[in-house]
Amino acid sequence: MRGGMTSQISNETVSANRAAAPRFSLPDAAGHFGAFGGVFAPETLMTPLAELADAYQAVRDDSVFQSEFAALLREYAGRPTLLYRAEGLARHLGGAKIYLKREDMLHTGAHKINNALGQCLLAKRMGKRRVIAETGAGQHGTATAAACAKFGLECVIYMGETDMERQALNVYRMRLMGAEVRAVKAGQKTLKEAVNEAFRDWVANSRTTHYVLGTAYGAHPFPMMVRDFQSVISKESRAQMLAAEGRLPDHVVACVGGGSNAIGAFFEYLDDPQVALTGVEAGGRGIAPGAHAARFAGGSPGVLQGCMTYILQDAEGQIEGTHSVSAGLDYAAVGPEHAYYWKRGRISFAHASDAAALDAFKLLCRTEGILPALESSHALAHAVALAPKMAKEEILLVNLSGRGDKDVWHAARAMGENLAL
Ligand SMILES: *Cc1c(COP(=O)(O)O)cnc(C)c1O
Image (cartoon, rainbow, N blue to C red; front, side):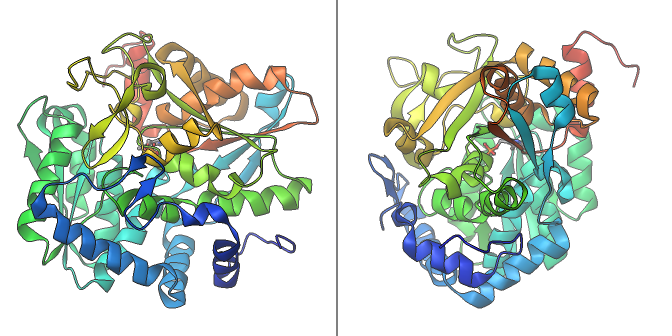
């Protein structure tokens, strides 16, 4: 069934796989991945969510929509991305052959553009002329602003005031692309409050407005829809690996914030039990309340911002503070599909500390001349520990979710350098 795959992904291949693969039966119609997921939303959001679920279901198997999406990924985002054999890194570490899936080469610098393009195309289909999104560090906001400029959609980005001060350059990038960036002044003035504000806007304006959620998280249909849009990563890597090596990788590793690049990188391997899958969370300064964002190491089941999943909370159910050197992994909850596959033992989770991620960041720069995002550096840090324990015929595939240009200043400071900028 998988024979003759090339890096060109045809619609026939997509729907043939979908029919055959049980992983596509998840979530159920109500958005459940086993005990996780679902729709935990106020009454006022039920109608827009149901309308979105219907609209997405209609385009999911629509060959016109899917070929428009494929063309955008190819011609605007720059897909397929390279599957790159990292010989310098592998030589340094010893052990496994290492490949990198180069999502860092995409337009706007990370995998987030895959999802932003898919959802903006859907917004257009639904007749919406206005798009809103939340952003933490600004990566998802930038990808959404770019997609809106491309489609001629009005764009409003909600961003915590604290994040806006920390990421002034990204705020200006979004404005250059025509987006309005609205400061959120509630609570901690960061990502969680920005999500709340975006939902509030959506309730008031859902007739004209689509909410582009930035990760495989939230109420149904968002986790499923974002996963579908990001699964192009593993569709490509699977075909590219078969072309390069004639077999599948032994182990795939990806970093996990909300979980979109990881589920995208894992999805096509879920039914291949010989392929080990590991998600890497932010271990921060260590697994103690407030010092990390490793939901599977320090969390418990609960509901936050739309779904049942693993979250960092105290004994009373109050959401704990989080910390990570990388803004994109710094969130108290994880996508519900990851919780499901973790419980079933299909996806393992590890965490990498700030220090290990910074070491991996430097190591990839030196051994390959590739500057990874600090988020992606967490996946690399796990690969650094794993590769030497693997045999030299074994293949380790790391999803390089984004590029690190955005992180240079922050990384320099974290490593004790004082750049005079
Ligand atoms: C946002 C981001 C992440 C984390 O988000 P996921 O939804 O977990 O993928 C990881 N890497 C990069 C480069 C990002 O920008």
